[in-house]
Image (tube, rainbow, N blue to C red; front, side, top):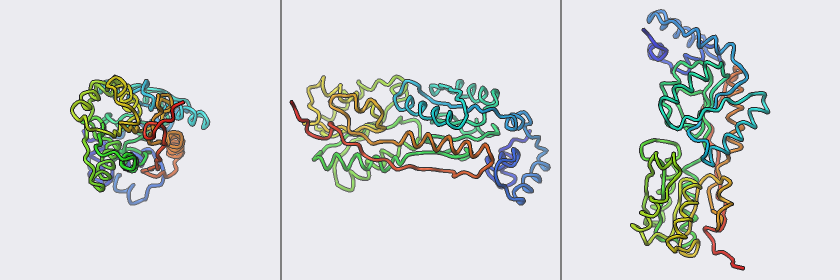
Length: 331
């Protein structure tokens, strides 16, 4: 039996374009429509009428799929997305996938079964093929999907470069970077690329360490940090891929008798609330979560109403300097 993907290949178009044609979403040229019509007849393709009817009768609910609800970054993103959705008259159907394949598939089915207007995806591990025939807009956060409607990202590469440049300007000579999950490719990997580029440009030695999915899910990085600092005792500057990792680095340094920022400078990423609650407070790369949430909901709303939307939006980041990169003033 032919699939939407087969029709797209036969017509020489993307699956997302074919999906928009079948669901009459946005501007589509007559030539593209004709190609799809010919391909469907040739392959004897029968459109998924259930999915199409769901689209036509969509509710004012947005399906929001996240991999984590306890992580400070996702908690803040969820809160901002809910605020933006409410302002536009939408409700949120929150799905916590925990990066489990079975739950991801089930939640996508729940979303379509509940006739959601569209899906905002904040999980990096959901397979692309699960969205081949959903027939509704899919907006991705910090991930670009070929068959998605649009993506919203921050400039991760710029953030990594900023972090390295700041540590180097503080006089750090031996840098350590604790990065993303080694088994999953994400836009956040570009933080490592930016960090690496800045270090190589200044000829500063550095070490890169990957994390594991179990550490990400449990938010427990202590053992990894202890091992790293014992293996690389000369480290005097660290860039962590998240404020959670950076905060735990502070805890480890305290236990190991390493003074921050006197002996070790630390920079995190995200600028969530935890960054200003630690002692000393974390210097970090600010990710514009509020703006990203506003754009994601607007893109979804525009796609639902048939407007053309930008396929990819990348927002700039900036460094927020706090105490972990400067000498503290003692009272």
